[in-house]
Amino acid sequence: MSELLSAWAATTPAFAAPFLLATIGLIINERAGVMNLGVEGIMAIAAVVAVIINLSGGDVALAIIGGVGAGVALTALFGFMAVVLRVEQVLAGLVTFALGIGVSGYLGDGFQNQPVAGISPLPAAWFARLPTFAAGILDQDFLTWFAFIAAVIVWFVLTRTGPGLRLRAVGEDAPAADAAGVPVMAYRMGAVLTGGVFCALAGCHLSLIGAHLWVDGMVAGRGWIAVAMVTLSRWSALRAIAAALLFGAVEALVPQLLSSGMNVPVYFIEMSPYLATLAYLLIAGLFQTGADARPADLTRPYLREERR
Image (cartoon, rainbow, N blue to C red; front, side, top):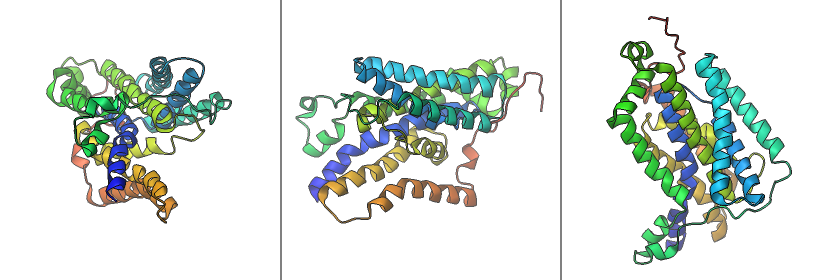
């Protein structure tokens, strides 16, 4: 049992990282007043492009750059629709989602189930002097480490720096921010593109670290869970770490139970992240949990001429 618990703890951060990266990206978006429901499509297109580049001989760095570039390109399209053209944000997000899923399926059709080298954990020798349990948890790949470090940095920037406070002002009251001299459109577009980088990194993590291959549909709703996790974390990148670890632990449990030979209802366990998301949304709807933290101008387009 102790070996099972150790292995479970050691694999949880890697399972949590894609949730955390996507949630960080969406928090940045929503703090600026923009809701991006296209995250699932952004993750998918980044995942497939990263695999294609890796299979074509590109190294890991090039694969990540290519995957992020593809994800940001799709994000830019969403930003143009939602911020510049002021298309209704939910509709723009759904269009982005559908486009990302469709294009990723088309691009990856000839590359499915082909293993890639991907990204390996850091050298175990770095943590050799630590207790086995702690060494197992810390022995992660650099992208997983980046996810948790980035969450702290994003929290600090959004809550303790001038640009972060101005970005939050844009999401809370765009006319007031504009009157104070903050370029609302520039901040919103910058937030959308920055959030797209994190969402694309989540997709790269899934294909290069989680699966080491591309399979159509591999994002499997994680982007939609990340949308719910923004509310669960009350728009705080620091709280998002705990939320991501919770969902990551549930996902990490499935392969551990299968490898142990235990007779468990696997499909029910695999449903657990989605059931947990549904349960939270029901609770939040009944008791308005986290409503006070919601940016006041979220999903509300802004025209400079408008005054409320």
